[in-house]
Length: 585
View 1 (cartoon, rainbow, N blue to C red):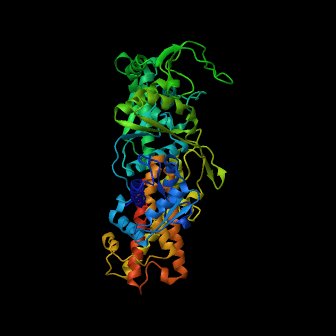
View 2: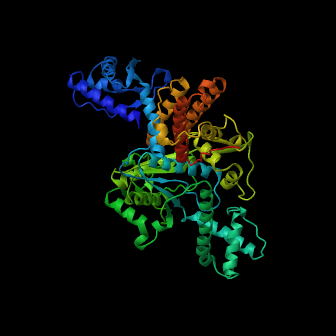
View 3: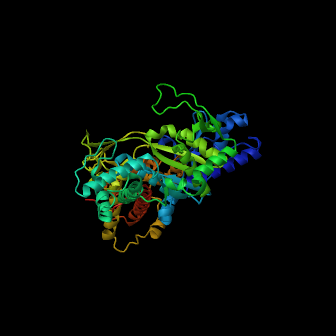
């Protein structure tokens, strides 16, 4: 049950009535009409901008239109008050029976409550895609959690989602990995080695070296680099990807597809990248030309030469982009275009790339490329995840000895657990820097959001344990509670919980549309806060306690409310990938 969708339909009916009466002209564009919670809950339960967004096209005064629309809405038995505010907003206050029906729906529908209807069109969410050159750090973890929760959120909103990881297994960085692993191979054979600058120094490559030594003995030592490098590179990439998968599994993160960059350049005639360039050239989107020098200080690799360029400016980019390097190999951008075309060919019409904040310059060029290769049928949204500052009691955490340059993601998971990592990574908008304090995320206090929300679920579970002791014969199944008399749920604290439960479908829909899972985390905290607040009121006012041994009817009604709230918390913590415990120590 989505009361926001229901009242969008009701407002559409009211606008039709005004159109038939001649108050409004035919053919108005109603796409921007929305129903949402008012910013101030004291103004009502719902608010709509219908009069504001339609008045200009209708050539009428927005406040006058709002008054006419409000008068029409007052005829709805579910509406107890329709008032006009400001320049033409309409606030609606609903009959308590509407909120009671929301509680019943949440109980009856269980995990399905708030979920959207199946929507057409595939969505490809690419996230993590960390280079397989070492263990993942905490920054990778933020993108991993964000992408996974966003994929879950889109599924909850009714979308068909593919979760994808792009393996950067081509290019210079994996050759550096192979040379680094080869040194560890020599070390495993008993040689004293020094890791020179430019190679990867972390101890994480020692197991790769030992595996190579066990498999090949000393046989690789006498081979030239051209012979051993491909073999060592493949072994090192496989071992690094195994480790990355293990770290992701520790966070409860999975992918449907692991896509290899090397496959784009394999096969006959240069592979998918060469085919892409040929196709773009046939469309007149590739040409030979010179680029103006970048503004400011010239980068070291800047070359003033004729290049093979993609007409990115024809699709909104600032400059055209090179597809070939001076040595004739493909640029990363060329491979990226071919990769995104592969996503589209596999059925995606909406592409979402979750990247680190240092990829900001990537956005316009890839959006231009996706427009070009899809003929405008597909869209790309790039979500940039800002840095994570790792703290302990407010002080920066020192580097990891094992990784060499950073604290690994796995070290953080092992110390504080999966749930705090996931929830706190989502409790701040992705494009804002995140301070992750290892001490604070395990505190049992209101100031620790993950504890506060999980504790609400545990408290709700304890209410049912109390009820079973107080009323052993009471049917506590969701179906039975949905049939209870809920007319007594009139305390402002009870109404607030029902109001927040009613908003869940709207929050899921809006968060999925905006690609912002933090909205759901915020809403769960707000719902938990309302529950804890009412719990505390019951300590001082026995008549407000959830379980009242002298009042079976009020107990049933409040158990229905607690059951709905508990189900909503569990289901939506699940979207975030966080557990909903029945007990907490």
